[in-house]
Image (cartoon, rainbow, N blue to C red; front, side):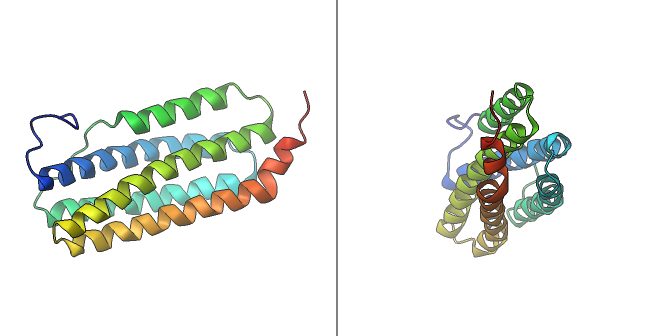
Length: 171
């Protein structure tokens, strides 16, 4: 089912489709985070990726709760956006040999993922409320808050330690 397919007839169908999209995205992120942690050289960055992996597992469980509230089985639909973000992250990371510069690139890639998730969860919360589903909105809001917090931690880490270290690298 594509975003503009005839399978989406109602606003509720659109909500469920978006839920399936982010469910897929979270599963792709679960696969990507261990690889990112393995590539990270800064201990706090590696630890942050490992912590976010555990957080993402909880976020998947929350999505499954929301599916249940809507009497839907958890199902993923392919999300080309997250696939593209992760593919680009892998390509960029593969091209960088300096560890300090690699860590800066990993943070940038992680923030691209976080920003994607923030847009999706924000939309889902708005739609859940429009549909009168404050139960779903409340669950999704927990995840949105975590995504904002992760993005903030990444920004602080980048600005205070990772980017200044990367800036010192000369050709």
